[in-house]
Amino acid sequence: MITAFPHFTRRLRPLIVSLAIAGGLLAIPARAETFSSAYTSTAEKDCRANATICKGIDGLIVRVQEDDLRRTVSIGRTAKQAEKEPATSQSFGPFNYTGDTIEWRRDSAGKPFATIQRWYLADNDDTDKDGRPRSAQMLVVTRLPPGAVCHVAYVDVKANPNANEVARDAADRLAKTFDCAKDKVSVVGNSGRATTLGLAR
Image 1 (cartoon, rainbow, N blue to C red):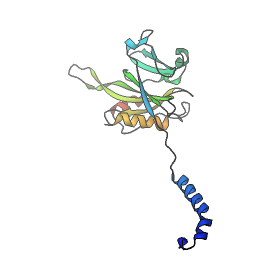
Image 2 (cartoon, rainbow, N blue to C red):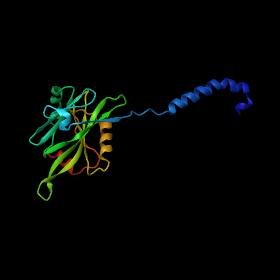
Image 3 (cartoon, rainbow, N blue to C red):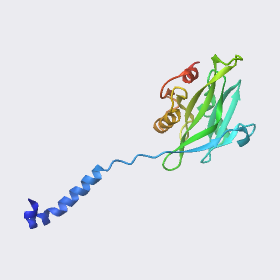
Image 4 (cartoon, one colour):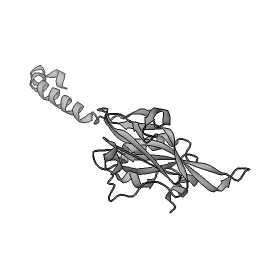
């Protein structure tokens, strides 16, 4: 119909173009933030001061402490700062230790906002033929500054075949807004023996 009236078409063309542009802009979804990972080690050979101070990324250091076969891991710009964070007092009832690799979750600007680390918890109800407890494995998501450093989420490795992906998703969704003073650490994904041991006190 419009093509039959050239003068009408000319008058409508600016309006049609404007509406098309506006419609196109409205149709474009907001670009989701992209995340990435970097990795560092807490192996004794890669750390100093009796394996308690380890290099992180973006100027952060990792403070690893062990007391009565129970480990804590905290993070800060300095060892003194890391020592004051809530994570310094966050461990678990069973004897435990951590894996050597820390995964750092980074935002689209490359800034780290969370870590993921594997913990091994002694399970006294599951022993080998010599009576030694086997380890239940759990991924711990920890938030980073700005704000306090503390545990955010626990992911049971055995109960979740895609445990690494579950932990990354938890870090990306929860870490930045998690309030260490008010929020409760959550079990993400399927619960299992490791998370049961981890939450027991």
